[in-house]
Length: 181
Image 1: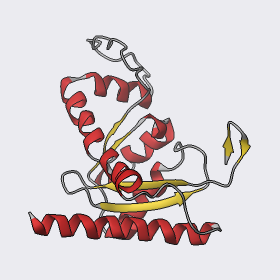
Image 2: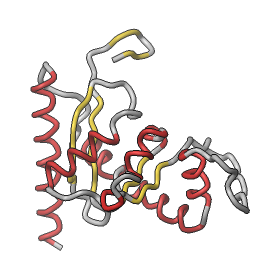
Image 3: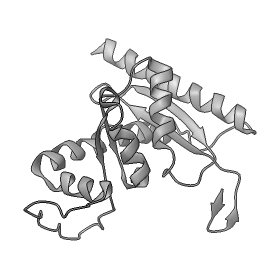
């Protein structure tokens, strides 16, 4: 992967998490430096690993693209549509939020423009705000509480297996904690 210091042997670990439970229901590792092309493979991983298609997706701006939104929309197969809440850009810390625009979208608005408008509504803001309480704690627990900051093995296939084990142990710990409550 390309980094500020040149190229490094690195991987991009992905995880899909169930709200409320904190269980990982889809995981994968890629060698892509960003998430732009990872949404579809992650949704497919959820389907493969759970046998179910997600009803909704909350994703950060790294996943925002016309292609990803078109995939979630699945206009040719309405029964395959997934409700999407994908951020279209980052907001700088301390920056004032722009007031929500009113009125109809311009004719020919792109999917990204429609998503941006959707996330400016009160309902869209409320749904998207939950994202930071769903997936971020999982990565925080894996990295901070369990100290998993780098892979121990070498080679892409081995890394995939190691990440799957990390996700599995996370789920076992979550289920154990839920049983103790």
